[in-house]
Length: 227
Image (tube, one colour):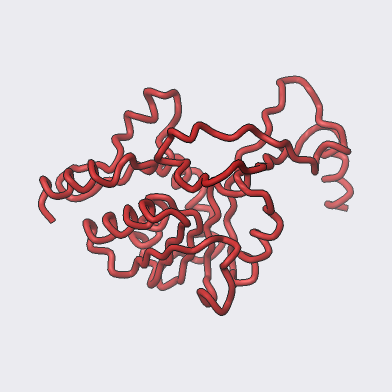
């Protein structure tokens, strides 16, 4: 696929959430876009902060089977494939996001990546098989049934289930009481005009965002667990 065709595809399928570098210096979403919004590039940030730990836990991605749910445009699936995963299944519930994954896979000639339309609640041994590593990035705080989702993902994870989630901000200097550590907050629906993240919203959703783990009570619990 030449540069002109890649640019045409990006314009037709965009906007993209993930910044993925394609051949010829073409990007699905320029990293500068995130910086202009005061945010770090999504894929590069999480790869930098999390992938080394995942590789230490698994012995590396080489030859591993990897599942990514709510993959959006497939940035993390691509990174796993680039690091040697033998098979990567990237799923989403939005047709355009699934098509974005397929486009990126073809542009990078990553035969190990499969894109499939599938809900996290449809994940099971029967539907997808088992995986050495499962990615659940930026999903749980959008769900009405996050525990059910984690249960589904755990059922197909042989080794590592990696979860990334936003949390309720904790004001500096304040302590979260013991009773608050396991609570969640209902958050307002996001802007439906954000096509790179919101195309799955076909109705109003109740979303739960977890509280961070911290405070004096949490420190005390850590001491109990360590003992």
